[in-house]
Length: 93
Figure (cartoon, rainbow, N blue to C red):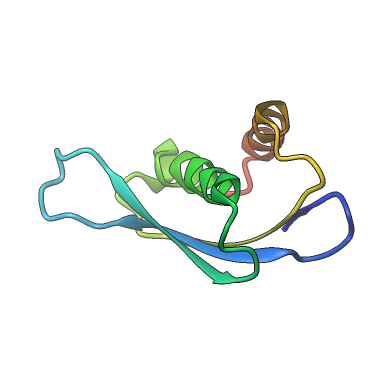
């Protein structure tokens, strides 16, 4: 959950698509489950986070998915960078 207003917000599922060709560039599926479907910035957050998780050395080849709740007052690029940096520093995977 990523929130600065104390709510769950929009629920988004993000997953790495598994391909038979291991040398192909990875692709990801992003799906809004509940909440704001009209905000593409939320999908950018989900895409960036699942990419960080899926491409981490410990997860190479993994098909882990991510359920993400996002509720932020500011969806600026600076906020995205700060959130991703904080999560990558925590190494929660």
